[in-house]
Image 1: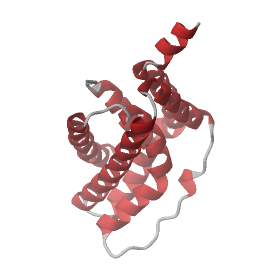
Image 2: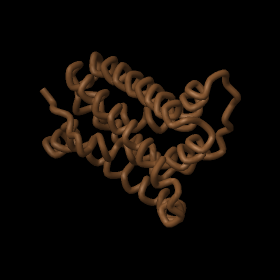
Image 3: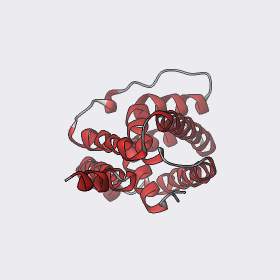
Length: 191
């Protein structure tokens, strides 16, 4: 039984959501704190459940070590430029739905590509623990961003180095998936 590494979950969460943290600043200025928290939480939970279900389906057909090749997804994303920042926010009936749809439209692809290989070997119980952990991080991040949104030095630092830090995190996550899945040990045994 694999016990999820909470440090890796934290790194994964922050690297996947780093670019969305900027959007949270704007959403917090437009909507109430609790509306942003709930919309962001729902978006995160939807993508985590989708990643887990896809991963569970793959484990029915493929050995875990072979699923380690999914580690190439976050590494690919680290070196692939996309234009997620250009996503337009649609008008919605409620602020909660607006935040959730904005998050899903901006982060769905990256979130699925990054969390899928990280969650692929998790049991149902560990996945529930992961949902609780990521849910807590989600709420904490919104509260923290609400406070630091007013600090101009933080905004300048994230603007200058945010993309590079996110790419480094993606590569580290990919390497972790290679190792944790047993792919590296399997390849070494073949040599």
